[in-house]
Image (tube, rainbow, N blue to C red; front, side, top):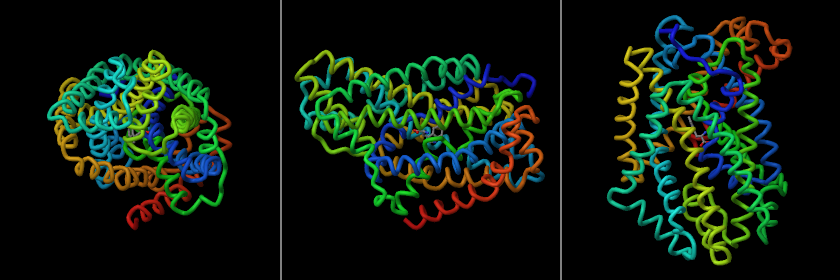
Length: 443
Ligand code: TRP
């Protein structure tokens, strides 16, 4: 089995794939709003510190476990530990990306629908009530959400069936640079609108008094969610990174790209929101109700520009959602191929059917949708992050962890940073994750 495992061609394509997984709806619909609400630049500084001191060590521990074992999540913990306790626990982390994928795919379906709408000029000259009505009509339609959820999941299945190199790597290599160009052009346009200044102030004006304990917990939670930690995607993707590459570079690269994208997305959305004179918000409503309203406003002045910007925006959303979704899909597929001996094709079909069914239910039962969301982002992801970090810090041998960290001593800087890294991994990260876990339980 191991001999025909595929590898990413280089560290750059590994970073693009990891960034593809990390950059998703969370960067666009949660980060900008959080920044605005929790103190602008002050929040960004805290977020950056948390990402580097806590999330990065967790990401690296997933990378170390994945690359050392060259296995899927379950196989990795089975190979690197004695007994079955750890690998049995890891089954939960094989399940959680599939639960996330089921409702993520429903939203992915909405973005495809909205891309079609944008092509059809649906937002030009529509008023805000009409935009809201369009969203309500679509989400409560008897079968359209199901059709688009199916379409979105099928696209993921096709990419994953093609394999790590010809599917996942190729897709991310093309779409990630494109996604950056799309979001940068959106940001430039948005910043050029009259009244954009208020949006920039909202994002950047530092206000340290807003950094409450809740803000700190949200910053750490968002950093986890945004970097896709604790669900085995980083572990699985890292198992495809060649042993010669520097995983510190791929970890830092992914963290930086993810943050950069979230900031640019903030500049793409908030200045336009303020220029249109509306209240910023978070969540699906920001993307599917607030932003289309901006396009309507623009539309009255220049219909074609508004259509083009709407198309660019929803194309970016679709790419961002797809590249994240395929990484969740791959976690399940790698497990079925390596642990259950199924062919890649059969594994993809199994995962497709399971996720499709749960997603279809989520599409019609909003309470199930939010249950899956809370269950995964508040509990399962935290559980997974804790599992990986405790495994790397307390179960694996220190020499093995550090030798994987420096790719068998190949990288002198990594060797120098070993002490700091190991301290963060062994003490700081597990304590931080436990604290958020408790906060989530109590709130
Ligand atoms: N990081 C993704 C985003 O920002 C969401 C996400 C959470 C995710 N967990 C994941 C993506 C696991 C892929 C795999 O939207």
